[in-house]
Length: 468
Image (cartoon, rainbow, N blue to C red; front, side):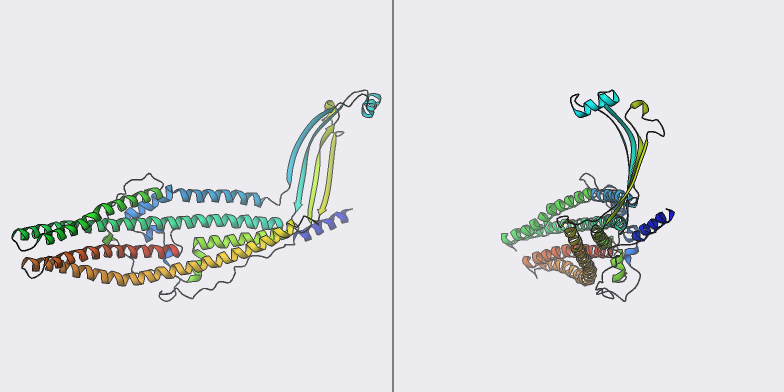
């Protein structure tokens, strides 16, 4: 008898060592050796910097901290982590048996004219049957084909997917706050330029009115100068509107009510990093949270395919039940006479399930291939994001130099046009034209500066920085 049980034990252990489905292996990715427009490949990357070290502006650091504490999207992402963690805890004990406790009491009163009623009265001297039972039942599925292990693997991968998803939300949030802050500083600078231009226009209008009184210019010249002044003045409420909306957007990102955002820094005072190392593409793929989340989704899909395959194989279940049972309440807990117990084992092989199991396996394999495609697509998009940010930084540096030279040239041209106009060597149209171009050049330069800062933020985000 002992040999029989020992043999059965080794058979169960041997079957439990089997595992269907294939172990996860990262699919091949076509990655460049280095990013386009980058210097020689290096292991160092700005993505390894904490966001507090990458963004050194004190006001921006405070805004990011408030957003990380109050942003609702990030809070939802953290709740999804908690949900996934609960499923992981459930999967970890999936190999344990399920145990149920049950208690029941019943009374059956058959018809006195029935065979059961007559028999009860004849042999037991009673007109009813009582039954009292208290017991526990156990059911244990032996993980023969590794199905439970695959379920645990899928649950863990889903947890890591939500974890990386939360990191991706934080990375995007940090980038959004930084870009919004830089956009706000740009609006401040453009507003300052517009107000300065209005003041200059007022001087030119007064000068033309004096010359009209002297008969040196016509009313048309005065009207054109006033129109130029109104053009600059129109920018002020437009920029103030954009400014207020941008402040509200920052406050809402931080989970706060709309309102103003205190700041003391100017756009030109923000220092752009001279060195922005990117590291190598392969390291970026392993670091960037949204790419990692896509890979974890692939791991889960691969494990679910193994579960679907295991569902098509036999299931080995061991069941047991025991407790106390009596037909009289007074004898319910009379031991050992009222004790009962049952132990059984069963092997179930699905034969015909109306193609449900085969369909589940086919769909699981398709979903795994879809996850492979999504992972590769996201990795390619990530490479493109980094390359685009590097190109922007390179070309915006050239644009900034040209824009700065243009601003200086037009400021000088405006000053000289006014002097020449006073001396009668230039007409009022040249003064107005120079002033108009100077205004536009100043606005453009501020926008290019903002674009440079945003490109550095985008490079930091696209490399996977911002969640530390």
